[in-house]
Length: 158
Image (cartoon, rainbow, N blue to C red; front, side, top):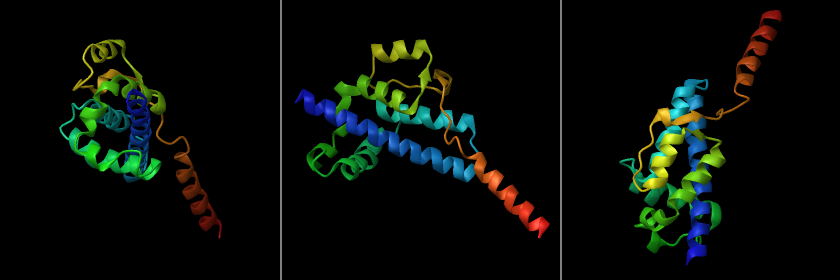
C-alpha cells in the first residue's frame, strides 16, 4: 500500500508538471513574451493546488490531475474509485509531492515557507514572495522575435 502511494504520488507530480508547463507555455504564447511575475504567480498557484490551499484543488485533483495520470501512465495507474478522494488519498505523500514538483520545475523557495510547510503540509498556502528563483519558461522564446525580424528584413530587401 505504501509503495503504491509513492508510485501514485510520483505519477501525480509528473502529470502536474506537464499541466503546469502547459499553462506556462500558454501564458507565454498569449503574452508573446515571458513575464517573470506571471510565471511566479502560476507556479505559486500550482503549489497551492497540490497542497489543497487553492479553492479549486479538489476540482484539479478530481479532473485535470486524474485524467493526466491516466493518459500518461495508463488507465490502471489510478482507478475510478480513487478519483473522488484523490487529494486526500495522496495527502500522506504531500511533502514528497511538493518537494518533487519543486525539483522538476527547478523552483527555489525561501527557507521560512519551507519550514512552515514541513510543519503542517496539508492546506499550506504559498505566496509569490515564497519563490526565490523560478526557472525560465522557454529559453528559446526570443527566436520568434528574431525569426520575425529576419522575415521583415528579407521582405524589405526584396
